[in-house]
Amino acid sequence: MRFVFLIAISLFSFPATAMSVIQDKVAPSAGVDVTGIYITKHESGMIAPLQEGQTCAPPYEELEGGMCIEPYEAINRLVLHETPYDKLYFGLHLSFFNGHSCSVGGIANKNNKGWLFEEIDSANAPNESFDDCRLDITVDAEHITLNAQDEAPCRMYCGARGSLHDAIFPRTSKTDEELDLNKAKCLGWIEGGENCDQYNEQVQ
Image (cartoon, rainbow, N blue to C red; front, top):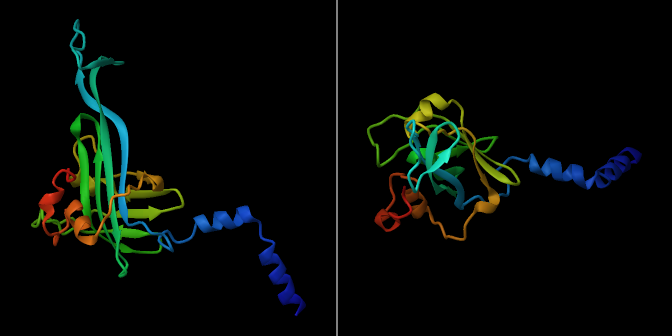
């Protein structure tokens, strides 16, 4: 009895800060509602070399290193829809300099880290094989991270300046926009979406 009492005391006296650290390390999907549309914005631009003896013509601005840039605001978008069957429908669009981007979508399977995307059945590329690209999707208390296990086979989803390495979305970037499974399929370029034309403005 004394042994049981000591265990009970130690559990109830466990520091609150330590408990919060443990909770942050819990399996990412445990009790976490990730379904939604996440948007982040950042400064980007069209870059061009500055010719010797010339200046950058508006709207271009001069950069260090003999380059000109036309700045613009770029948008990154992540669409997530979790099902009760340990499946995560997702669509990811990342924007980089000079209009380059990465776009990938599909169905990821739950594992002990979060979710793993291994292949895609895309209406945009029905005859391609994407089996070699593996993308980890993990969630913690503050962020959702998508990361290619090996960037080389995943480059088919990206332009020259794009990368699927550590694409991070703050949990606070989740929008108020409603998202059902059909909309998630459309925005993730996943086969089976119906009436996707209504989302044309959102599909990059």
